Image 1 (cartoon, one colour):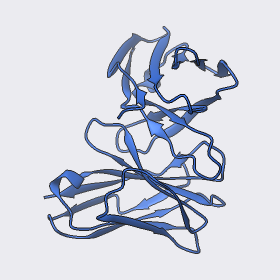
Image 2: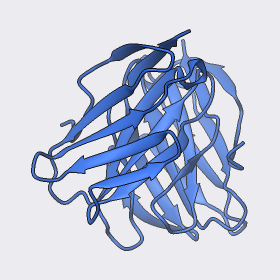
Image 3: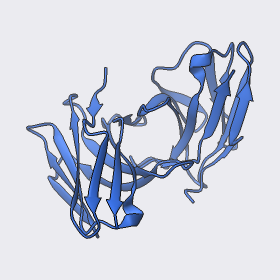
Image 4: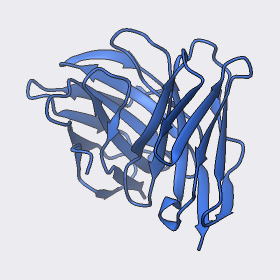
Length: 114
Length: 111
């Protein structure tokens, strides 16, 4: 069963505008959430994370929002740049000492149009 | 560059064969994770090792096995290969925090 879901397989945004990528999860034991960016022929690259004790984390143009009651998180990219075009994966983990494997969504392909 | 290396980059083999994928974690990272990404799918967790010991197991088939050596590199062994095993296999490492750093992957094609 897919415990982390990204229901939008693709998203197109104009350069300079905001990109909003969404992610839902079902497992209430998840307490740490991450976003990874993936270019073709490369491994996923860590982008930003958030702990369940927070509802927002910001790093430059990237902000992640967490709504625990809705089991929903989103990644905002402002302003979007053509270099942001990639597949974005949402991931989640439960804090188990020594065993923190990640559960991934199926990804959203973001295209930023110049 | 994440600091995680994987070899080989590509592997083509026939059904029924056995292959070994290799991963070297980032310097200082004790945990190694293996993930499988099939076409248009998310990454599926296979197995985790921490300092040589198996720590967590995901949806790993019995035909697959892994180990982590004293120098912390890891190998994923896939045997009796089937067409459905064709996928990207990623290795990731971490020092203990929850951010995992991924290698470039090995693309396995079973014909």
